[in-house]
Length: 352
View 1: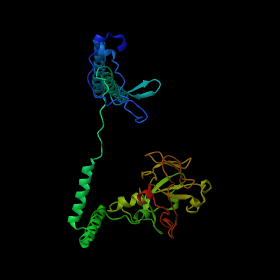
View 2 (view 1 turned 180 degrees about the vertical axis):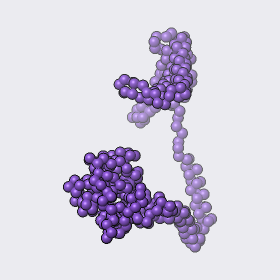
View 3 (view 1 turned 90 degrees about the horizontal axis):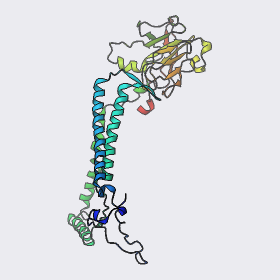
View 4 (view 1 turned 180 degrees about the horizontal axis):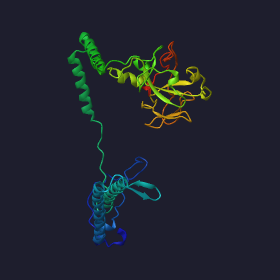
């Protein structure tokens, strides 16, 4: 039913709203204000029964929202965390998460739908036009502001008193340097310590479990051994800082299984030493699969191939694990032949 089908005496009285000055377009004024079109009444404006139906619909939506919120609270208190349900076609889901999401979604949707239905059917929809006032200041106000500025500049004598003007500019330019100096309070600069570890030429490889220097015969094919530099003690104040960079994992491979030439050159009788620190976010790597020679980071499943330069074959790690060049000393113990060639750890270049 439209307003054309309703007797005129049943229509609500029109309110007087300012629609702006209506004009007629012509050659001199091609953009005259055409005014607003005639207002069409909705069925709810003329039929109280329709208005009551809309009112009941809005109330129903709000009531459903309240019930959904109560359901959310009950689900949170009653449903066990470990209970799962099957939802076709998604599959098995956490019963609590599914119920909380469903009830909260229904509660929010019904509030929004009720508000929209209320606004579109019961609130006033009469169009109102309001004339926009000019944004710029009147000419006399602008002239006064400019005159006041010129008078102020003249009275301050900033043009004549060059000494005051120049020193003021100097003070304003230098005072921000105080804030720059405060940056020094953030702590000492790291320098190059992130680029180096305790490993150096002649440093023996010490077993982390036995705390004894390692010989080649101590490392058997297929085993994974963790090592630290000789002289680094757990009771040392710097132990955690240094082991976070120097932690080493040692694997013995058959030389014929090593694919990377540099890895083979830096090994000793198939014994290779790589950084234990994952190049993704710095987790310690500890899972080794001896058949494939892959090591897995337990944090985010980055996988490295120790037979091929410890390159990344899966996961979010950005680059291969750094390798430590090793040999044996005069007493037959495994030793480092230098430090890592590249920095260990994650996102080094982003850390500076």
